[in-house]
Length: 518
Length: 111
Image (cartoon, rainbow over all chains, first blue to last red; front, top):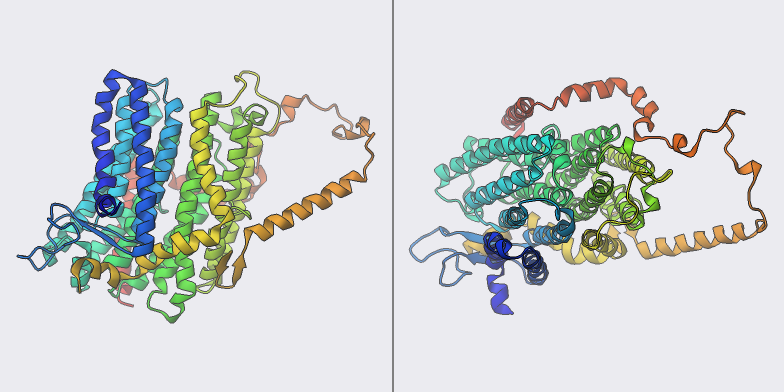
């Protein structure tokens, strides 16, 4: 087991990467074998990630140096700085890795039936696995250049999957917009990396953080990195691509896109806390994250209310919920180094980080239920749907669990993370809490509209009775089980999973020391 | 149990309280007449007009929160004008926000 744990950071990226290129070969021989192979890979990833994350939460940061005789040795004998590709997995990285593998597993099961009638399934699963590679790579990498590389892998795979059902014109348009946005954000990240490399001669995040001098060039790089990752995580007012792309992607891919956006959110937090955590820009960065958070929460939810397309409505809610994460973690960043950090700052960060996992679970689930509705009715237009609760009882229950959770109703997990955010950001400014609570009320109102329109009323006459196929239900069950677990034991989750993640994000010196050794 | 800066949250206690509330509701319901099966009084009343059929009674998504959006018409007009759906505008917002962030960091970056 210790051998597996030692190589786990590389294995978690390498397994889906090799599997992605094996998938089209297996696809040529047997569709069934391909499905079993992809699901087996996703299950192995999930199990390995749980074991590895538990080890990280218990024993601290894991370092993996690619190509080194000893993977834990980061600095070569002839060099003073780490020059190889270094993967650095701390509590926050492991936390994000857990989210990525869990949602990928649910999306994998869901896809089996959801895309059964589509062509090009071999390519679909190849790209799905590459999305997982991109997400895990972004979350595990310890250097800026590979952050860019995995960011690109994720963006290209995501854009191709948004356009998967290319016979819908809007799918191609959504993918085109996603691709343009990604191809603007990518070079901005690369330009920032080039500035930092030109100035310090290293690419390793820990080495850069240690050498950071807070020059004007560093500030320009910070601005480019914040704006690029904020746009890719869907922060208002750079969110416009989100509803256009999320709406038209297959439902399983939309659930994956939520986690892909969260990988960019992770990168944003990593830049602000770890790379620039010891610079004078911390308070300003925190204030900017809070402002992005407020705008995202309020504009996201108010734009959701008038929507008639169920997935577009949910996409605006995804923007709104990202606002909570930005608000919580931004408040923590503002209080970093302040005496109040240990109480309110840490609680705000825990709330924001806990909300990332909760959001991945309930928003993933809600998108899967929207996909189930589309699967049965062949429309996303809420004006044309009604009475689905008569025939889709499980989907109705899953939808209600997701809706109550996203609205922050007790006893669901969304309430637990929002409670931490409400209480802690109140000490930064009471207005922040009031807006956050108002947004929750509007979220509930919006989802009650969906519930009433789609599930209540007389049954639709021209829709085949009965539930969606079992594999789609199983995908939803995976995420529902996560919601119930997190709802029943929020204290355990925060103490054992969220707190180590928040603590590792806030502890810049431990991150630097793990690589630089001093 | 989840400890928060101001107190704690225990979903088990909440669930127990919920079960007790459901029991109380059930007991109150048990006081009702078990032989009552409904009739004229349980039908919808629309000021004496004929009640439309079941299909027409369902309120569609486009009509829900109509008043809310009407009351905030000015706000929604501004939002709709921003959401053009044109990719050039999306990129313009990105460039504009990057420029604003640069100015903000230049002025406030070292507070």
